[in-house]
Length: 600
Image 1 (cartoon, one colour):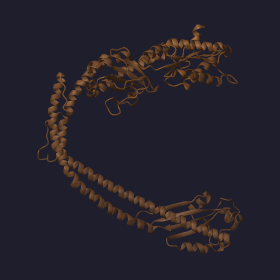
Image 2: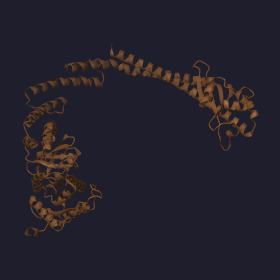
Image 3: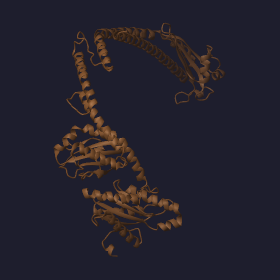
Image 4: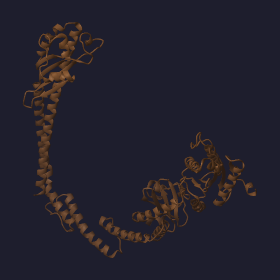
């Protein structure tokens, strides 16, 4: 079956089905609306009857209520109207002058349950009627007091008001609306069929020819063309031209895959694909090389040197950023990192290439902003990002890098799984440097960071404040309350320090009751005040581990790096001397280091 015939059948069938659905839905909606309108009219009529009966009762003219009911019964559309008394009213006043007993089971059900009953009957082409039976209940209000005349309780059903009303007038009105709507639908769908026939289906011969050409191209036959008789518009002519270019370009790509020695880029998509094949081969080869590396550090070294040799640039640095801690570390530096990467990397934060040559490309973290640089971020895991930073004092040295930015990004994406594996292994190694009780770093990690910070200081000159804290009377606490209470005291100190200090500060538990804090980029004049604030904070908190609580105090010693010594490890010892001085003074004291302490 031809495409045009298939589409015609689908379109016309869809239009017919849609027409039937809309027409049926309209008839159904109008029928429901008619029923609802009739029920509303019945409710309003019963409401009038109830109000009239209330008025007769209040005015003491109940003997006239039958005349009132006859007047209501004569209204247009009213088929029948009657009132049925409940057994309590009948027992008290009798059956009434006109035999006001329940006519049918509906009346009895309403009298027993006290729930109204309403239903509409009659089909689309039949007479329609609504039956409504409403329970007349006893009330005790300021204006109406049924309890004064009847031996009942408030809420008891005194009787039922039942009406039967014809609703054919509403049906006639809805039939008129349905006829008008169907006529409009017929006109609308006629216009739609005309548009389909004259504006859409006439193009299917051409579309079918285009489809045949594309299918043959999908099967590998790029010599297929559209007949000149059908190729009378810009689209079909362009497709024939594109097929000609595909045939020519694919021949070149096959040659390039065979030799893998030449790459050309004229802007044509398929010719660019041949360049991509070379990139793929280069990336795959380099990826296999990195698979032999044991550590992430070795991989960073090979990545930097690979790009350095390819682009003939001798200053490439690798920066790692952890998004959960917002900390950045320099993992490899070929020469010297000329930016304050430790305090945060813009490329890692925004996950965008930072290029000094672009508008807004100047990174505020650069220590020497006159340098030219390009930083490429690569997401290794959701929590880990590696940035390849390429720096040169000559602007033109970075031109090849900008032109090959896709190659750099592709290379990093290809090896990120290998990097992630090495990072995971090193993370496990890092966990071995965590104190399990306080979740702080331990003494082994502190020794590693001392070496790293010393290296970073040579390029960034970022100062550190050092605090050494020792818990006062820790031995007494363990002896008096037990080791479990002592462990809770240590965990409490660790939590307080983490909550009080910045994420960039390093907190270490070096001994059982001794903590070392390295305050990142801290003014030397502010170190002692930070230590004093922590001491006061701890001294004013009660640890609820015993009845009445336990106050834990610390002795604090402070020192500034490199003000007091150009070796960080020596500054930590100086801060420890100051802490011991606080201990000798009785504890719960913060003491600044002074050179006189060395003499004593």
